[in-house]
Amino acid sequence: MEEEKQEQTTEEIKQDDTCEGQVNYEEKYNELNDKYLRAAAEFENTKKRLEKEKQSAIDYASEKFARDMLGVIDALDMALHHAESDASKVIEGVQLTRDNLIKVFERHNIVPVSHDEGFDPTKHEAVMQQPSEEHEDNAIIAVLQKGYALKDRVLRPSLVSVCKK
Image 1: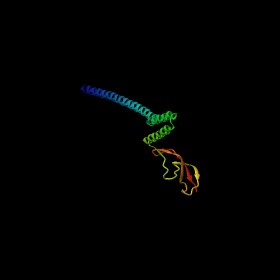
Image 2 (image 1 turned 90 degrees about the vertical axis):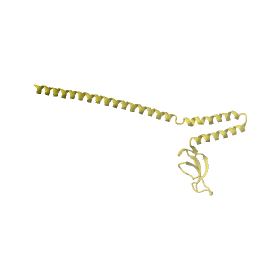
Image 3 (image 1 turned 60 degrees about the vertical axis):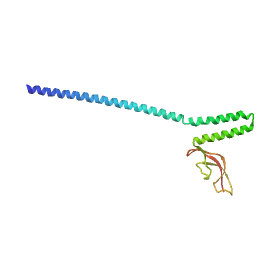
Image 4 (image 1 turned 120 degrees about the vertical axis):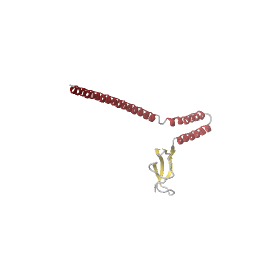
């Protein structure tokens, strides 16, 4: 009888352990599933926030440049205002405006395309060819319109006349 009691108690303990084990596994599963769902939601929120910040950065990328250009507009407005009274003031105002614009460009790494190295089809556009004994073949004879580059990227190529022998 005592043996029977002991077997029964052992079986009850095993059953209790099994039930507790299942409860623990289930609780552990629920806990890990909850952590996974929270991490996935946090990842999605971060992804949306970063996309929103990226779009905002794209939308307002030229804000600093635009703010700097306001001074140029002001100078042009003053030149037009003085145009009625004194032509020399207009010339002076236009020159100051041009200088102001060049300074704004320099602050934003916008520089004129160089013509010192000769004709470069990636920086220059040949719109005319002229014969010339003074220049080498494909040398730049005249710059018809200045080109500009932003750092190493050409914004607008220079329009040039080149020598064709």
